Amino acid sequence: MTQNLNTVPFVSVENMMQLALEVGIEDCIAEIATYIEEDFRRWPLFDKTPRVASHSDVGVIELMPTSDGVEYGFKYVNGHPKNTKEGLQTVTAFGLLADVDTGYPVLLTEMTVLTALRTAATSAVATKYLARKNAHSMAMIGNGSQSEFQALALHKLCNIKEVRLYDTDPEATRKCAANLADTDLNIVICSSGQEAVEGADIITTCTADKQNATILTDNMVGAGVHINAIGGDCPGKTELHQDILTRSEIFVEYPEQTRIEGEIQQLDPDHPVTEIWQVMTGAAEGRRDDRQITLFDGVGFAIEDFSALRWLRDKLKTNARCEMLDMIADPDDPRDLYGMVQREKQRMVTK
Ligand code: NAD
Image 1: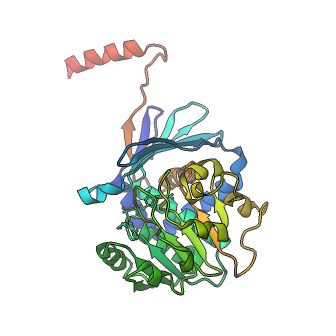
Image 2 (image 1 turned 120 degrees about the vertical axis):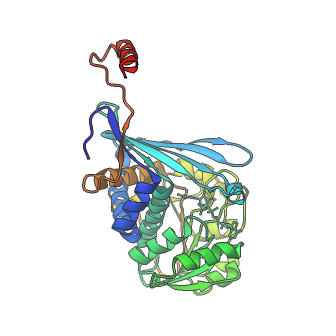
Image 3 (image 1 turned 60 degrees about the vertical axis):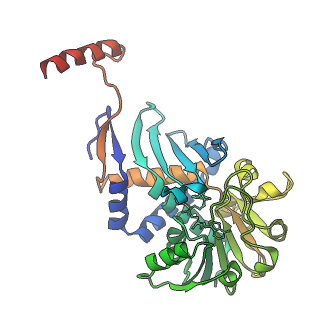
């Protein structure tokens, strides 16, 4: 890949899919998980802000920026649960990485597929630190776009052997089961959330709704279970009954954002939570014993996207699945932008 200062590598959906298939979905997730762990371990040096959200009656559009002082990244992402009924996706995204020194972009990319990879990687990292070491079965409630990635991540990184699927729409479960059929995961199709959680060591909820839902009630969660609650990620959009939260040790990404968007919006603003990065650095305790219920209240934070962008930028060094976009004006004299535009007039005439 050759990059002039005025061209920026762009990774299309097609190129992202081909890259993911070439590397292998599970290996992509594992590699991104390494970048996420690396960035979470240096958490304090990042610029952090809750994402900037623009809500409407039917969904949300968000910008998620961060910087480590050397590079700057942001993601544009939407969440529109009603979209699937119209043949559109609930979540789509694109993002950009830039050089802090010049402010010039160094990568522009689709992030719909990349978000699924990084969300799965984040769940796997949290699960690795918080679930019981002998966990081997997971319930996957909500079998939409994210679900296969979530299952594969826990298979690859957390030794999960069985996935118990449930979705209110049986078609979604059939799709998910068919997509996972060629893996060595044991797939169990369940007809209720209750059936899905029976015997599961880990429960991942990833449903899409515009309102508070109760995907898990208190009686469904037994001692020792680890929960990844990742579908509730907006004000007024939660998945767990409040009683589960008060019985759990709660781990979050960035409390300032999670208190607005996560399951903990149901709790008092000073309810104690642990920042997951501190568990990774050893500054805070993770799971204490095999009977404790641990909850990763994952809403998705900008640093995870930054890690995914860094991974992709590094990947392009050996696998140039991108095209170069003429995105940055490059006048001969940096102050003669007007002259550059005028010279283009002559080129247009002589063409
Ligand atoms: P999707 O629309 O493709 O799938 C959602 C599935 O949930 C659908 O199959 C739907 O039938 C099912 N569902 C809805 N209500 C249900 C219920 N009560 N019980 C069981 N199943 C139910 O959406 P997606 O792209 O898979 O995303 C799912 C959710 O995850 C969205 O809310 C999205 O905003 C969120 N998300 C979070 C992160 C994060 O980082 N935490 C990242 C990506 C997406």
